[in-house]
Amino acid sequence: MTTATPHIPAPVPSISFADQAYNPRLQINIAQQGFEHATEAQCHALPVALAGKDLLMSADTGSGKTLAYVIPALNKILNTKAVGFSTRCLILVPTRELAHQVLSLTNKLIKGTKVKAALILGGEDYHYQQALLRKNPDIVVATPGRFMEHQRKNQTDTKHLELLVIDEADRMLELGFCEDVEMIAGACNPKRQTLFYSATLHSPKVQEMAQVLLKEPVDIRLNDATQVQENIKQMVVVCDEIEHKKRVLAWLLAHEPAKKHLIFCNSRKLSEELANFLKSHSVNAVALHGELPQDLRNDITRQYRQHSFNTLVATEVAARGLDIDGVELVINFDMARNLDDYLHRTGRTGRAGAQGKAINLVNISERGLLLSVEKAQGKALERMVIKGHEAKEHRDAVSAAKQTPKPKAKPPTPKSRKEAAEERQAQTNAASIWGDGNMPFGKKKS
Image (tube, rainbow, N blue to C red):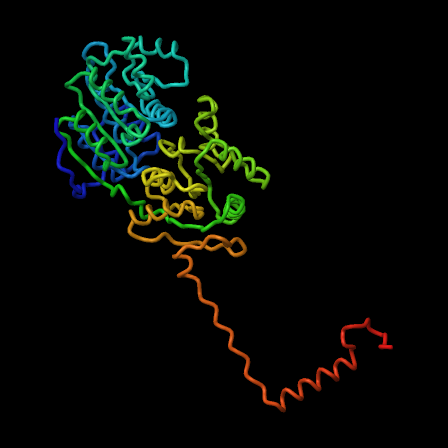
């Protein structure tokens, strides 16, 4: 199995969903969800997927990849007759949050049809999932670990699978799911179509996985794996210790208007600490991290999406797959540990071409992480100086270069003997009137 030679694709015609020859019911559902014109990623991916070809694609987060594979899957299921009773489409995603979002979109687009979709993921009732799989749903959205559990016990049927979708393959690698994905694919119909999506494709292991799973794919690279989208403004606030960062964070939330704020940090404990700190500053903030029960995580995500609160403090669990409109400001309270995580965090804003802003609070211990981001992008990120909240201990070269040097004080002009004598006489006269400072006013020396 081979992958195609990577290339930058030529521009393709724009797609109006109303003009496409999709299944009539699917066409109605697409219109009811307000989808009118395809994004650039969808314009490239949809014709390939609808033609039944394998696809290897990298595109920015928020570019609409989910719709680019759900539409072809549903169109095929609605327009063709199944062979046997197998699941017809299997969508593998790395996180539970993303799985719920994919299922939510799928359910909206199968409204009024007989197509059945099931969600198979860890953290939820295993026996209920067994019952779902016994009904051979047309579409299964799953995380690899839990699907493998069912597959080992012969509770899955992918013998006649028609379409396998691998979404966010780079995240699969980070979470250690590559072997599971390959084993799941190995049990699927070898004649299936495979769509393989990843925000970045520079990892040798991701490329190796693609080579194993795909057959003569169309290779579409729409992004530079090291770059942030141009519509996202990136800034840096140089900080000292954590308490200084907290003061800066409170100032930013008070002075940077945004429909939704998304704050990232690197630990569960800190996410909860920051949420409580912000609440004490009258900010309705909620923490989201991987140690919360799955149903609570789902509820927090739903409330955030519905504007019940507008400030989410999250660990890396929310960096991938959290597709929520209206996040206008991302704040990295802790710098991301690597470039890929930085790109995914930053990509939570500026979705679908909207304007976004990402502000990084960087102390001296994170300087190396910032430099790696700047080196990858070939430029220094803009420094933001907040009057009254400047760092006292940490200075960086970019900030120092932008500071206007203070003019040197001019040395005093030497006085002539006459001027010096006159000054001494004036001081003597003043002391005789106001006292010499050694005694309280109104008292004379004895």
